[in-house]
Image 1 (tube, rainbow, N blue to C red):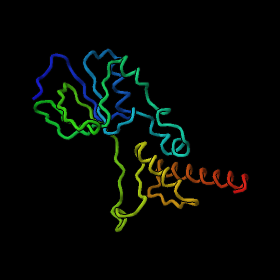
Image 2 (cartoon, rainbow, N blue to C red; image 1 turned 135 degrees about the vertical axis):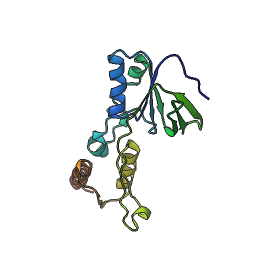
Image 3 (tube, rainbow, N blue to C red; image 1 turned 180 degrees about the vertical axis):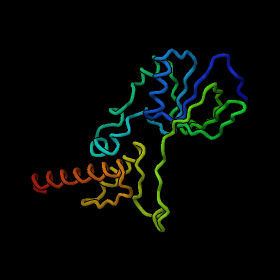
Image 4 (cartoon, rainbow, N blue to C red; image 1 turned 60 degrees about the vertical axis):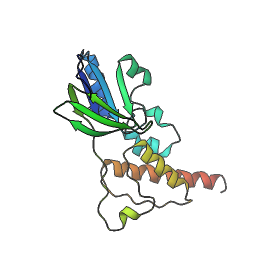
Amino acid sequence: MTNQPEQSTCVIVGASHAGVNLAFSLRKAGYVGAIALIDADPTLPYHRPPLSKAYLISDDPIERNALKSPESYEKSTISLHLGCRVTHLDAGKQTITFDSASNGTTEVMYYSQLVLATGASPIIPPIPGLQQAANLFPLRTALDVNNIKQAMRQKAAPKVVIIGGGYIGLETAASLKNSVQMLRFSNERSGY
């Protein structure tokens, strides 16, 4: 069991744009307690908009889209717990339990303030047969985009169906359309 420490601790679950900006804003506003960012994504927090645009069609590493450098977190004494999935919340004891995929441990952390900044999860519609479809990808994380890129590279003339015509769906469609056209133009000019 975790005893309540004397220092206040703000735990932020979700290390994308909202969670990271909150952590740094707290420091800027003079918050002196501990700040912990917990996220299931093992990657250093990154900008999400490039996922359906530039990152989708480039070979650049996701680190080029980092929200902050690793040194920024250290300098601001913000602890990162990446690749960790929250498994339990005890509001009475003010503790949160999370598992680390990297080392298989479970940790219990006390909080004096808790922020849930997990964002949205992609919805895969309940269309019969869709769950069993090969090459079915949501688009929310860098890993999702890496899986899409890998599937696109495996086919000479990939065919894509995008379910969802919001910002992400439309940006993904435009990026993939331009990417395939550029690939075809490049192959025609080089004689392939």
